[in-house]
Length: 212
Image (cartoon, rainbow, N blue to C red):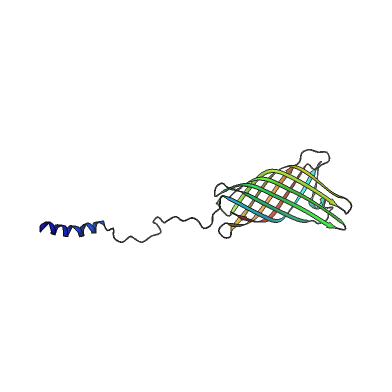
């Protein structure tokens, strides 16, 4: 009888000892569960940009602006960019960029144009992971000068190398889409010559549309 009474008393005490009781409510200072951020870059990215720019071509101690290369007519200026690459870290992107600055003028039966195109390996760095960024690269370049008066249609192309630098700001729109404002500048080198262009340069301001 005494053993039975002891067991009846022991069971409720053991159950009470194992019951931790109600849990304290979550407070801001306690450890919260981790969730993936709503906006983050994937392993790869692709994008394009469009805007305007200007440039010049130099050689034999002289320099001609895009306007002068179009026979002092005010040309239509266009800047284009295409990029694809790899997200190395949340702050660093590496990829291939194709950038082109073009100026063309037409009128009185004459069409002329000057275009500088870069094919570059480019690194883009976001100091705070998003927002402001800087970028720099180098690679190959092509300069094209075209003239068409209805009788003669001539295009001269010169190849060389270049360095490129730029900065901008990226605005997140949606989960993996960025709208960017970009300012790039680049200088090209075509080698020493007595008659042909030896160098060129351009700047371009454009809006970018990038998917990560």
